[in-house]
Amino acid sequence: MRSARRTWLGAASLAAALMLPVSFVAAAKETGYRLELAPGGKEETVFAWSKERCEEWHIPDAPLRAFRDDKGEVVAFASHYKNRPLIGPDLAHIATRCSISFQAKNSADPSEFSDMSWIAATWTPNGRDVFALMHDEYHADRHPGACRFKDGMSCWYNVVTAARSQDGGKRFTSDEPPTLVAAPAFKQDVGQGRHRGFFNPSNIVQQDGAWYALIATTGGEGQKGGTCLYRTTDIADPHGWRAFDGKDFTIRAVDPYREDTTQAKPCQPLKVLPTVVGSITRHEASGLWLAIFHLGPDEKQGIVGGRVAYSWSKDLLNWSPLQTLLTHPTMWSKDCGDRERYSYGAVVDPASPSRNFETTGDEPFLFMTKMHVAGCKLGPQRDLVRIKIRIVKETP
Image (cartoon, rainbow, N blue to C red; front, top):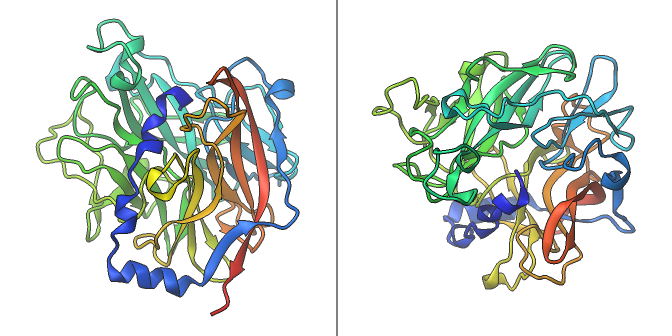
């Protein structure tokens, strides 16, 4: 998830969000809630790279995911590909552990799905058994003869796989090869010249006896780009995840290296959601689902550096038009005058009664990665920060 290879997220068009069916507009009006920064809220540093890093590229490189373990401690990940936990008594006091919970094998064989992996989502029923979705990158430019191009973006191929921990997140393991949750129906050498595959799962949430996550795709070879909703009725079964096909959850990931892909079917991207979702949480007072996005510059709306946007849903399928929480330089800003840029926003409420922080009250926190800019470039100096926001019921 290195920033130099993330430009596609900020380039995603918001045109779809401006051409919505009447039902979506009505849904937006029905919500009656907005997000704003809490009065007097100040940015707080959760992980300070200058003081707490275990090595140079020990950085917060994904949205924060957290759960309470069986001992009552909070275990969190905002992972780089060497996945290290943050552990503490609460979300305000989580500290780095230099031990690595998971690291892929840097394998040159794309069929192993084990080049570089990020713990992108976690969910636990008891604080001991933890089920994870992994963001798995294969960078063919790093492996001789694997790519026709030299730049990383053109050679980047991505899948989402499953992993599991049986000790509260201290160590994760996966099958060999890992079980696919979301994957393109073609091998890594197909369509080179752009980034391809499925990326950046949201956190996992439970609703009505099933578990859900949103996963982004850049499309290609019959698959439309966008964000698809995935569901499983058995969180312990890594083979159980299915994507929404427009009517039901029927789409199983097909392994392009081991299976016949001629019958593989595409997932149906959800309307309104333009790109990767940082987090989804259920607002306790309203019962609505809240999705958070970090987006890049938008000339149509006069947004130069980028913004944090959000959307509401009653059912995880139908989402309201995007609204803006705040504007600030994001990792896709092109302004060389930036001193800091932000990304990987996720809403988490430390007071949530959910073991997996799936719900939020009226005053949660927005957690983000703050990236220090030098010479118009992003380096490893990145901190995990948070700022209090609030959810306000609008007066009719």
